[in-house]
Image 1: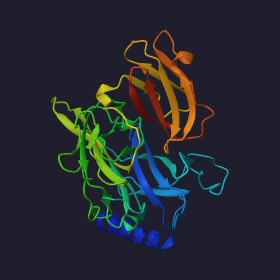
Image 2: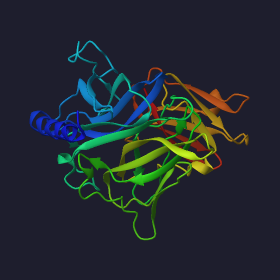
Image 3: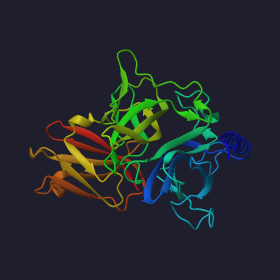
Image 4: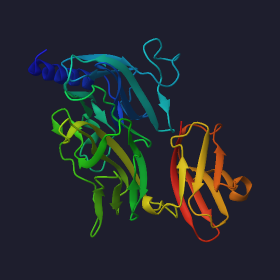
Length: 364
């Protein structure tokens, strides 16, 4: 299929889906994993709004592999014996308003080259502050896979420990860390970019406002996004390019791929709930996301007594305990969350020496 015919095909598909059905997309990313030879596993992860006007669930999605071919891919996560059966699974709600949808497939490429993997859907969520008329704008994500001519064809993309969803508070510094990791050991860099539609940057897109004297930046090395200070309540979408770099046979760094990650941040008025700067954290919480047991590792052994509260994203208390009940000699606490419903939660840790920190965790 020629390049011109390929883009005409995309335009026709967009027109068809816009008239046929609509899904409100919050955020997403495409990752890939080398399997063997020139064969790769491709996973599309899209977070969609549950319910709402014109809501339609996607039992399947179309993925374009960047070599002139594409495929209809069935959704692979969540229960597989519901309304999508036998043509896909149901997806996994992570809270009452958001569902994670994963579409996983394999594809064999013809050989070394640059391949732009992509997917699109007609509608974003309504009312995104920094995207005018967002509900009628295309949701589009892409990832560049480079199969190099030097070394091995092996190339697995960056993976993330934290989803492209987060929340912050009006007039408080907000920090987002996607917790990226490259399985091949390639170097990673980060840069902010505009969200994409079917013909480039989303029309009218602007970076979120930080107010007078504020900042909205991303650290190009660590990937930590700093926003001081959000000015208006609502949802914001921010796209980031996560690039991978690898030394070639001459010792020079070459671009080996990237992920265009489209994240959504919910900003609201908060009362006493905040998160400290990532560099000053005195505790780490692993794993995150968590399925059963989560471990709190305290970095300083000052014998401070802690009160630990698990809350939902509205601040409603789910569970409370004290460090004396669970603390170990290794200065760790193990929490069993097996019976907690999947979703995004706040883990608030308050000490008797006026130390307070709130961690965001996701229960799968």
